[in-house]
Image (tube, rainbow, N blue to C red; front, side, top):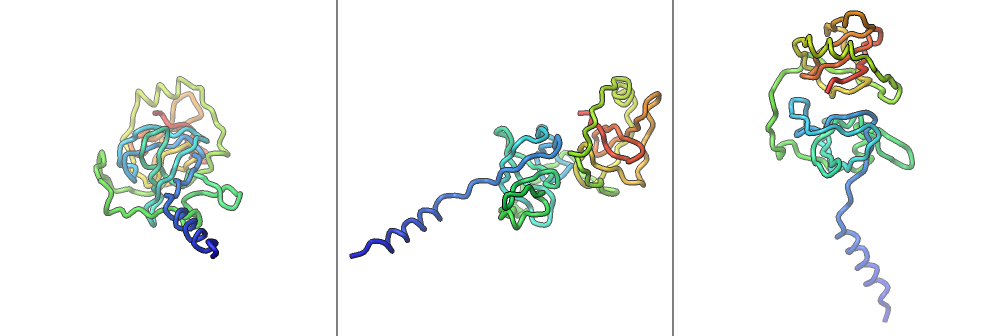
Length: 202
């Protein structure tokens, strides 16, 4: 009597019973970890650039994924998360199906944002790894903190390298080469020529 087929079937059933582990991904820049899927939700912490997170799933048709970072569960903007597919690094947002990520039904999300607002545009996706700008300019930072401006609300996440749309007014920082603006209640320093965020004042 042969036990090959029953043993093979049992092995398949055992493999199916083992829950799939969460996908791991890395942040391409310092990235906010939020309490919910949107920039109106409070910030719970910051995922350090290059740090690893476990991605539990993403909302279909959205840029937001549920992740765990250093034991804290929250939501991250997947345009700034990369994972590995067929030995190549890929952006999570563009490859959710290929990465076989679980779809999270937004209806089941506990929605308790810090505030609600209607975005008046969208941040331009940046290339954080190509913006290695380190600012050590206390004059600029102190001026911006002492002279806050009214916020403009934009879709997307506020990160170094993201672009400010042309229709958004940015303000000069006297005696420096920088400008600044308040995006989604976060003050940021901007490089005027490319209108790119070079520092987020946390």
